[in-house]
Length: 414
Image (tube, rainbow, N blue to C red; front, side, top):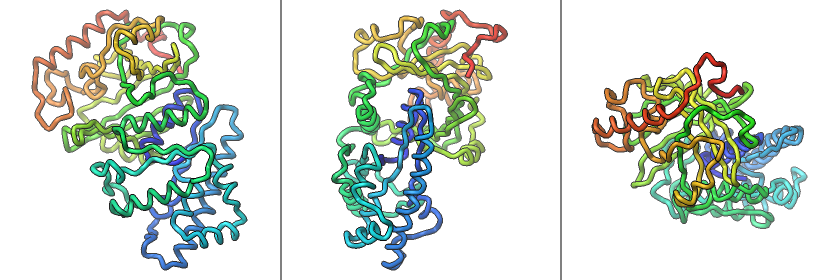
């Protein structure tokens, strides 16, 4: 399977929340080109050798991950950023056949049998040109026309595979990502209800305590999550790190939320532990770290995430629980889908009082100029609206029966 970083990160998170083990095979070309190779400057014979070595290296790296997946006792998903047939898009047919012969490879085997599914995410250079950029991409040098040509060749390289899905740009960014996850889940026979319908919207609910006992929940999986907000130069952008895992094994994601052309864009990039540690140096001192347990479960054919905020945290987060999911149903229709074993207070979708950005602010909201009602260039100093948000959060807290920290059951144990 092949796609951009954000799609890969979201797909990984989705299956990890279902309890799967996810392996992410890095793009071999990026590793090699990132080492100083400029493909366009290579003579023809060197370009041919580069593509041959690229294929050899890619297959070896993939085989290492495939072996790990086969040895696992858990359900496993292996995501390959690129695939073996991609190399054929950048050499002539004669050169490709020579590469296959020299390496004793069979095209049917490395195309049809090696991967269960091919997902091609169409470049934004086709149909979403305003979002195409080479900025902050160390190995992407091509302009729009070259990007379109490369995209066509890359897609055509997989013609003949029995399961190819093309995700184009005839919808907005969020719908494109949902289509990606949905087509993979469908191929695996996983019923996820309407969560990933192209018209599905994220909804969030405040949950009153105390947290029910584990036995009240259907089959679930808990993850330890920590969020760190980073410094940004603009009020139209938010940047944060996420550390997520269980039993001492963690994954790391960098998320950027920004306004672009009137649309909210959220870009997620997987990180190594080293990159994560380096980015932590940019942590915004005006925000506290957000610590929580994320409980993932299915109920009424609906996929839910319950975030249980935990210490250390700002007092405003103590005892807070927020439930999230996606749906196409109206508010009245969706009421019957909500978990009966949870004490649902009210819907808080889009309410700045329950935004993680605001919840993590170190200062009291009334005194803070960073309280965000919306991502905007405007200075947002509506103190009346900020006080109303504070009152809405306090109202939820008052309804909850808080569990004392010393009771030993303040949050789940991972």
